[in-house]
Image: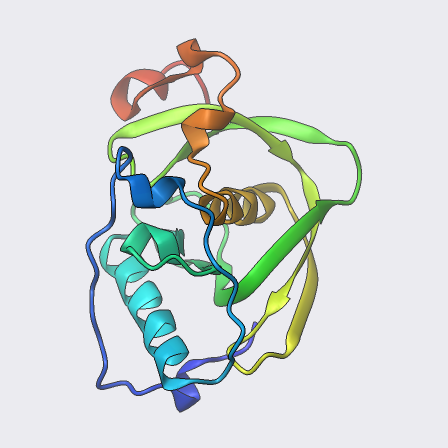
Amino acid sequence: MHHIFSDCNMNHMTIKKILKMGNLALLQKASPINNFNTKALKNIIVDLLDSMHAHKGIGLSAPQIGISKRIIAFGVKDNPRYPHIEEIEEGILINPTYGSIDSKMDYALERCLSLPGLRGRVKRYTNIKIEGYDLHGNIISMKSDNFFARIIQHEIDHLDGILFPMRIENLQDFGYDEEITTRFTD
């Protein structure tokens, strides 16, 4: 991933409120970014990363902080919500897309900052190819698997107005953290 902070205004730091399920803004399809390397775009990215860190997330989409733009942030490092997850380098993707590399899918419990305290078992592709852009409009293309692939699919869903409970096949696989984690392992 590309380091974005070198040319972002570090004086601009805002922790945004996370919108919760039920807010209609989370159900809208986000607009693509057409102008790269702008001050407004840099500020959105800083806000997104600051908010993700402050709320101890491992992924966050711009719509979750009330900005209907196709931008996601991700990264895992010493996260108390995910103590056993391998480190994933922090990054952002603008106008991201993905495609499955093969037909392999698996189930895992997911949670979301927009649904605090809830988890659900969701089926997702295991191996994906990701494409998107960085702050400067350079193309980013990479392959991803397992947990990182799941994060990317979850965050891109947010850009299309999809929350993870909409992907749960059996609502018996959805519930509060402390109850459902006793039934499934990650």
